[in-house]
Image 1 (tube, rainbow, N blue to C red):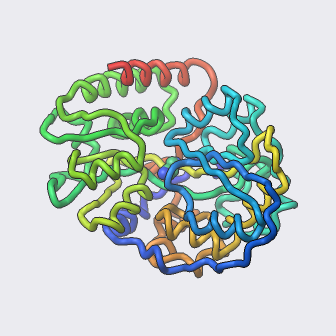
Image 2 (image 1 turned 135 degrees about the vertical axis):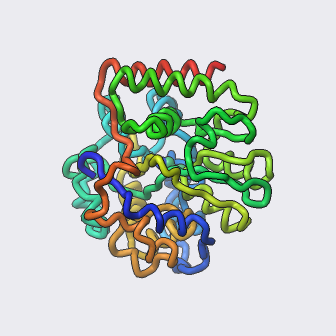
Length: 365
Ligand code: N2P
């Protein structure tokens, strides 16, 4: 997407959606005969809990290859590992706002979408995004907003606000995402600022707020999406900041898990698939991207993960939660208010350094 686009009109629907269970069985992918094994291994570095394992198995059988997927729970962890070398992945899965940083680090090679026939299925609103003009390096994979989740069997939030965690009260046990742009972004939103603020006074205000938050007795630390979901399921915490899809995966298991988008607004991001510069198997990697962009496969993935699907051709195969809910369809006309705001890359220089300093300080407490 170019610039910030927003979802205010979609909030009520998403709130409703967040209370519903996902039908993981709605779309079945086709079972295929195994091809002769080629000995090839496709290595993918991906956000955790972000693909239907059945899709991976079928790709392996159809192509006679092995697929190895290693996972991460933040863009920072992904980039640090790839910058550190020593990994031999073909594909990675950065969020929109990390694509340019990967390019600057010379980690990417052009995808050549002309070699990926199913690229034609990408919905118009996700084509030619500001973070990758012309889709030279990325295809959109899935997207999600971030919310506050709770286990209704042990806690009823008195308000649908970030004040539950950022306000002065210290009566609930909670965790925040182990993700600097999400945590600082949520604090900025709570204070009425943009999640992409590059204003030093605004960032200092967010820092001052977060300094008070991390010393609360109820603050039980930073965690990833799946970790937060599991702590909610186990009843270890009352509340957790979480990527909505990760929570909805838990809601399919336990109806007491609920999530809402706080009234002050929140973040959203698109996660992409990129071909790494050092890919050993670029042809197979493109084939994998082509497969996940096939309408039924793309739908099967999102039906399994409960994340937003940017594939126009998959819509007929999406589970009702994803197909009929405008929160997962991003109508362009509704993307304007700024309440739910796409995280974007920060301008280079002082603001990113301030984000880094705030995050190091918070994590060292
Ligand atoms: C998957 C989390 C992906 C959302 N577990 C992060 N943008």
